[in-house]
Length: 299
View (cartoon, rainbow, N blue to C red):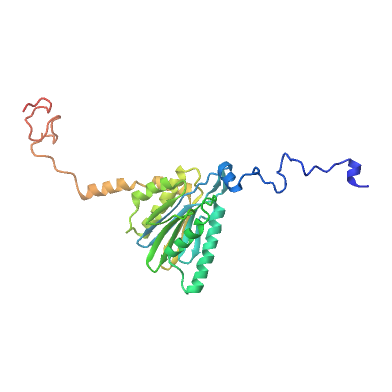
């Protein structure tokens, strides 16, 4: 005797509606609606957040990023890697959807490898940026979210390009991408110089990301630092963002240091001739005036 006869169990009606799952093959999109248009209009919008930056200077290109991967208010991974190597002389920062960034970097690695086999040499950083922007521009409007800064060294020297998933491609010296980029730009605009030393560049990148993680809720974890040289890219360090920010707060501000050095190099002006015995002018008097207050003096 079958088990359903003993227990008087009836199989559920698979043709009817289920309160838990949609019918097989039906999906969650109403009939007559285009799935892409419907999901783009009514689908959930997940909040992405990160802080990545890159800048070009005399000794190469610096790339830095935080390590927190978030999905809305949920921290998915506190120690992810947001700087992805492409080949020995090229790497890129990732901002946007983690799956999209990883997939397109794999595609870029494959295409650059094929071009190197066909042409006998690796393409330039500008060619790599153009290739990536051209491939991603075909998927414009399909919720692809990839924003990257390609950092490399080719025959023309250090190069830096910003590429977005809608096909945007920009060349520059300083780029910061992510929800913490406004805070990072504030530090970069204050301290960036093309003729920096290597240690000054490291300190600037760490300071910019650390301040951004302190202010931006979606950025945090640690600070990864990479350096692209003529000999290839180098993984410099990983520092805890909270510890790094606390250490930076204990250091003297650069502006105060410059003011102290300037005051030592150029002492203040001497006391004007004719002042009182105490070396101070009477209140309301100027050197060479008639001795009356300014408002009481007549022409």
